[in-house]
Image (tube, rainbow, N blue to C red; front, side):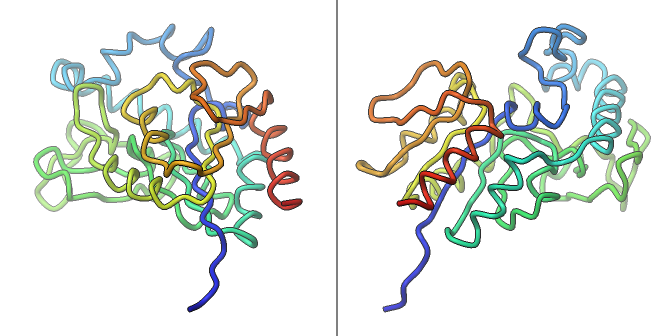
Length: 231
């Protein structure tokens, strides 16, 4: 029997990317105040005005190219030296990958990819942050759309995420309100008795038995690393 590093499963939300300068939807002054959410992030919105949705995510992709991973992303990568780290993120940016994390599952899609309107399995990467798509973008005969899981659509990666969560030896939640489903339900799949940490400056809806670190993502990850490596 071989020894293995403990499996550290980390569920991340908008709070970890916000510290890199990415505008979030829910915060004051966020994207939902600039754009009606159902216009730019729903299946109905795409059906009504696909050109707007292409333009919106082109803007998000361009903005992504102007920011960098922050210290929280970097610490997650560094913890791979001691733990079998899996990141399950609600974020559509690529900051975890750019920081060097090797096992990242995106629940809500990825800004740096597009997929066929008629075939969810036909996915192609963008080459650059300034690349764009439009209603006229056709790849190998397929009209393309942003590789984003819209409201009113199923979350196809949720089941694989629950399987990862169920194998966690340590489970961590960073920068999410625990109010967005189905992602908020991941904690329910963690085995009983597994240590769970919740990093957030203003935590809400804290499940029983969860250790709260009241801090930003960068401050909280530094504290968590101290706790885990000391243990």
